[in-house]
Length: 531
Length: 96
Image (cartoon, each protein chain N blue to C red):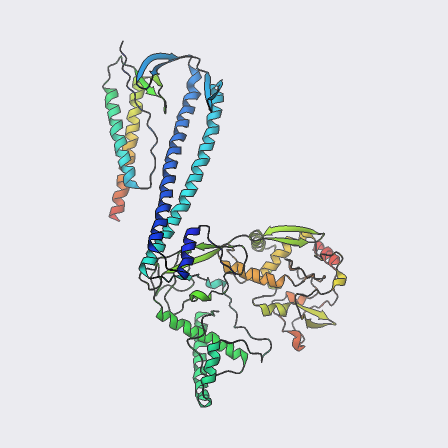
């Protein structure tokens, strides 16, 4: 996952340089100078063009009234300084300069038309110049901040992104499917273990459990936060055998460490924000700073987890001057660009669409109430949920798919691209798909949060390979709609309660209806059209 | 009959600037100019002709004296109003 470079190479270069080499003050100063030059240059040009526009306006006015009289008494210029009284005759005949010493003789009205045309051009030029000026003004500001930061504190620049809490996974910590598999632990963790004596373990275990409980309580208070941070500083002394506990340990350690880190790190606050009072979720705009509270949502600089997975995501690179900070901090937030993806619909056609549009459509649908009710669809929050949801029914029993990427049955497919359903239903299903994946994640502003898009994308990327529809699934990754529940052969999946993983051969009790028959894709399409 | 070509300049539109003090200065200089124009126009003998310059060119069109006088007075009043407004807004800012 590479960070997309912001449109302006200057600050980006200097920001990346800060990682490797120190921000050189003279260069930054020079950058700022140059940018300011551009701004003033633009201003002058705008002035000039405005005057031109003004002149054209006066000319138009004069031309419009010129034919009213047969002749005018004027002062005829003789050279640059002398004048002679005279008359202006043939008031309707105007010779217009077309450029390159070519002239056109036309009537006053025609001349007015020409003037209008020229004014349009002037207006456009002024607009462009204004845009450029605005752009460079913001760059100047950015460079200023950068300068302040580099003056303020050495060479290290902290880059942070604030993650909106409501887009966080409010999920539990991940639980391994195979209970006795051990996740990879950090090297330090293991080293600690090897150093511990057995006799200590019992005591340490007790302490550990107490700590665990305390932290769990704290966590509940704060709302569950899924933070990955460096697990190295605070390490559990005891060793846990189960993977889950280990994971929890790590997470809790992380939390503890976070809190410790929070108390250690000085506040990175922007000017108008007071420290202790602000709580986490109040990320008002991109410009807001981190909050020094007991619970900071900010990950440490190198631990941003879910930022850069998506494709066309733009980063808004903003900096905040760290006022009295040891580490200057750059805050940026991602803005989301509509992702244009090629889709394989049936009949060998491909569609391009943007997720934003789809998102908007879905929201419209949901808001208008005509869309699929969210209760019908399973909540998919973690990858594990996908495995729970998308199971097959074989002989009345639920059998998990060993690989969600694998094609279910090629025999059902007719055409080679095996894309199911008509394009007509496509948008519908897309909307449903989205409602599955991020219903809770308040997709109110797809533009605002990369996380939102990420979640969507992540979910969808995982969901895509699944054929929720009863038809054959092709190996290609296709963005598919989740069919309305009436069509699926596994209506159980439509229920919000996820069935447990059938690996363990559990029979679902919540399944109300179960059609074991697999519906061919054409029939499915027809059925859906009926609906 | 000697015609005196007093040439009242067309009151150009004020260029809005970001800096209010600069704007204020521009206004004040324009106000001074307009004052002169009004004084000159009012100080003309009745038989004098008044010509008006076409913008951005050397051509002067004959214009009615009384009309020009009233027009110039109007522009002067407008400029003064704007100046006053800026001053007031600045005062309120300072107060705050």
